[in-house]
Image (cartoon, rainbow, N blue to C red; front, side, top):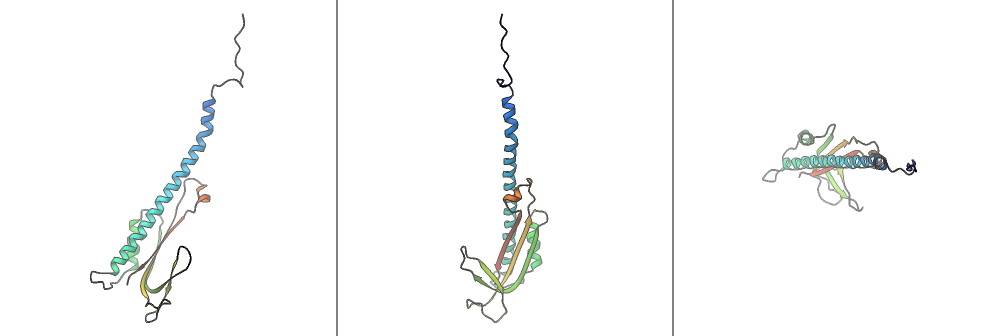
Length: 166
């Protein structure tokens, strides 16, 4: 009577699926964590942009009334509105103005606008009188879950707005 042959270690297929699973799962988890990190950073950037846009709208609305004449705009009120609308920790908001200035466009693509200080009674380089502007800058540093995220994308999020009041 012959004894049945036992498979050798190289011929055995037991546990192959477990081994493949153990090799693939860490890679997939890393990819999914990185993707969720990107989505969280994008969400924070949207929230920051929304807060700055809301502050710009508030500054514009405070600078105008129904008859179209100018009212006083407080930089501290604009900053308080922005900070209260953003639910991110350690957001830095700077509101400059209202102050007189001139806007000049560059010929780069896309065109970039530059605000330069002006004095009352003088003309801007384009021949127009200077206008009153408020400059809003908000910045936030995103803390990624995955350490390699900072090598792929910047963690410093910044949003700016320049509002012409009158």
